[in-house]
Image 1 (tube, rainbow, N blue to C red):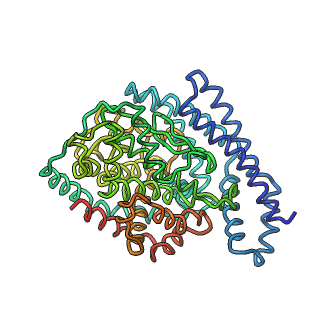
Image 2: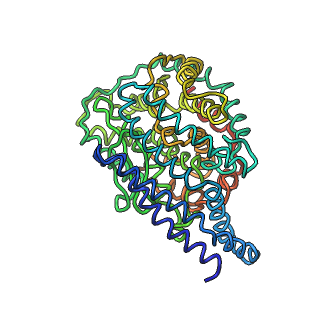
Image 3: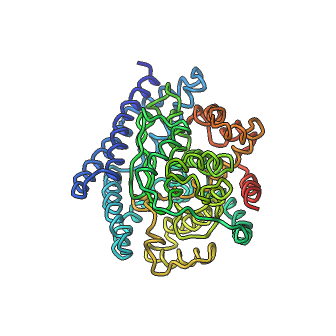
Length: 495
């Protein structure tokens, strides 16, 4: 076999084990009985170690050298495939086996205990486990930073958003801080003058699930290659051929689960839309977490919270809950419900105007945690101060709805949070470009959203990781990231 063929065959074999890890992770979060956690954690740690061994086989370096010597003969796609395989190999090669296994075990322990500790508002118990996770994350960050010649935090950020720098995020978030707080207040003041009727429950879970699946089908989700389940923290997992979406239901508020389902469907459509001929290769995967989040936010915010889509939701929700004569289910009112802005404690329930504040808060904390400027025991006070500054709310003593609400830090996913707001910026920029080419509102009103999905497929999904995020945005919109589109979008929709 040619060296490139050997590399691609090796990475495709590795993808089969990663497939198993993804499904085991989904099961751990949704179906696994309480008593199975210790054995599952040990099994997944061994699987993580095995995958790490496969990524760091000694012969891979020789194969990469052989391909590099003939790189001038590669096609554009082959060259991109080589670079993505090399990136994964380099990222894995710098970490010792002992650290890989220790991270997996500490993360599983912290995440599993967090589920009960959060319910109990048990910060002290959680902090004890988190300290171990943070110590290992710092160790990893310093190893990666030495290789990449960057700051420790930026080395972790690169795992989720390749090519993005902490300096660029500081610039983008600094600009957001200049206009976002006053915009939040202006929107809240404006909406206070607009009457809103909140739909009153109960909305049985079975009916909510049926409505969610109906909307998922309208959004093009393939149930032949995916399913919808329940978990403590909504997520989209699995693999492109077997996508697992989860949500959580509130029988007094059907919009919470529905918007969560639509959000995760955006993630799923991206995965299901990746090029089949590149399946199993790093180059065939989603470009970054920021781009991934741009698709979920495009579905949830740009599409689902628009007035034309609110009309579609209204029609189907009336039937699902038998609320034909309920004034709360009038289109104008339901649209106001879906676009209501109100500072709150919970990130996943936040509206799109206040959401960036939740992310900037977390970014500031995790950046300083990894750099060593602060320790785990300082998180609650820092969190409370930032919540008061950004949203006028205090979380003093309220760990459950404050610094313990997210799953990300439990397994050491530091550097992940900024991608949520980067995704919102990308989504606004993509919609602005799409509107120049398509009658988006007319397409939504027709109920046939295929032209929108075809545009996303052409510009995002089918491109996978064949090019950089900057090139992806430039090819789709004519420019690299421009945060002004997000500001124009927010102020245009809400003010």
